[in-house]
Image 1: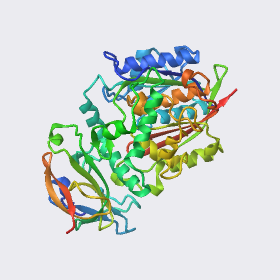
Image 2: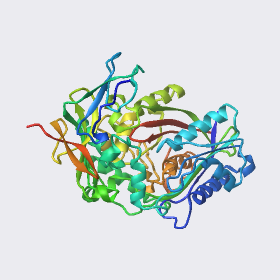
Image 3: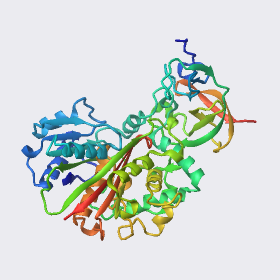
Image 4: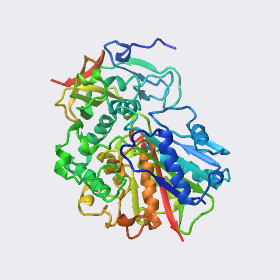
Length: 119
Length: 378
């Protein structure tokens, strides 16, 4: 099995995804196999960070002291250019359908993907 | 064939000093009394979970505490869909001859047993531990994401969603056991504190203490019988990031399966008991199930369609939004109320005809679905 690429969940400033060599299925949650057909060792790559906003929710009530320091923060679902959907943070004014680019910002002790509107 | 022979429900709200086991016991005793059965008649126990007092063997903990030695017992965990999932399992166990009388029970001191933050934190863990939870989402945020998308696709507004909170509150005002008894208006909902936009405080169900229980039996024990006509499930994903498109929702799949299993149509339904953790949950599920057209559920609320004296009375006890939400027991109150309606015991809340009821539960973030039809038999 190939070495796992580090991504933001492993404190690297990157978003990664997997593509199945057998069926072409694209997945965001890392696994040792393709969730669509079961083939092992899907190909891993870094994503471009480009995408489009699918949904937003501005969190105004957080449940821990660490996250409360950041309210309000905008949680997004982003449809990424490579064909997978991910959850991330983003600028407060973003609307569904906006074209966005990924950066990274500290949140509750961790660097997390933060999307801004494509200029 | 299986019958719901007894139901038990505590008031929801604060039960200072009561443990989860206390609330389960109270509801279980009420269900046994309602069925006219003794502890020794119960040979199966299914129970939910308690976030306040987690245990790897809650069903046997409860059985020992309550004083039953069943031949079949375990806990079930499907989030908000747990109550109906347990009822579905009890139905199949009874039909298969594994048990004669199955006690389905849940209860939790979720409001007074832990802080609100602890409850919100515990529930947020339904999110993905690596890819979602580090972003600080809450359950309202997961549903807030679903809401903005649904509103975008079907032109639903925040004022539309507020209608569901107002309706559930107006129903709760007629039930002495409901957590909230003060009427609210659309303006109140719109002005309530933002939680996870577009959801505001009054779009969200509360955290409650409470317990609920039923007995599912092979034989009816009373004159009025409520029969489980048929049920089905669908599980499309766990995490909202991995949810399918709005065109392939789990509720649509499970209701299609339940309709096929029973031969019933939505037009046969006279009473609806639908999961309502948030206003968006109720709006979407009503439309997914075919109880309203896409984007039309709010208009039906405004026209009185879902009111007690309307064509399709809905959650006449006030639902999770206003009767309260104590975890697994939360949505079990919907079934208790349906049973009271079907057996003509709903007092000042009684509807004209509850001969066929449709129940639907949702767990996770529209992840797990159970649809069930109940039928009154004379």
